[in-house]
Length: 237
Ligand code: HPA
Image (cartoon, rainbow, N blue to C red; front, side, top):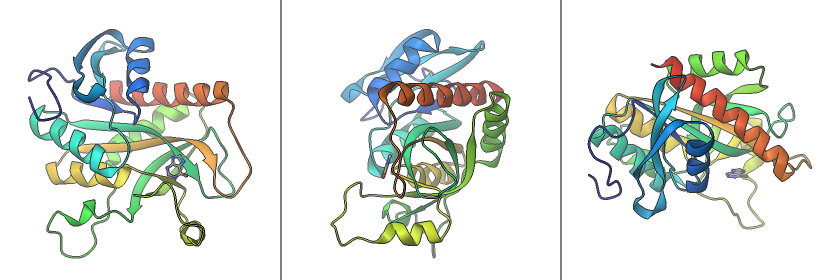
């Protein structure tokens, strides 16, 4: 038990998928996992454990933003023996060669968040994905023939900006693939505990091109990412 998790010890599998949205956690559990059991529903975050390809896997929402994923990932690593967290999120693309519905593997996560400054680290810590998880994730995406990109994302504390904000141009110039709001905190927390983390995002919108997804396309793109993430979890055993 933790302040935000009422699951009993051992209730979570070694690998946890984390969408931001609790309804997506429930959707993944009910539509993909075999024999899902609800293990935590404090604040409605919908944590389940079931099986994929006979391997135990859990899914639980992170909520939106770095303070939120910071809390849930900290407790899963520190109190529940979780070894691998795979964030399955959405992101806004910055580069011309990226289209909506593509996957982005966040190899690194640059950020404007203060979260990463709370670890007594001298200088700037560079939050990165677990190489092992990313390697298995990329192998899974190739096996399923899903289009993907690998690179730096930007984990932002801000979804909305004043009109005068011009930061996206600098991000694009520095090769940032996409903007999301959680990876840097997840990667930093994993590093602190010596555990593994990976953020995979489907591109839901493009910040420099007029591209939009229909609700059906959004669901198809999401399902592809979930299958890739679950295959990755199965490969981790
Ligand atoms: N910014 C931050 N997070 C996002 C975005 C965005 O433009 N699109 C999808 N998630």
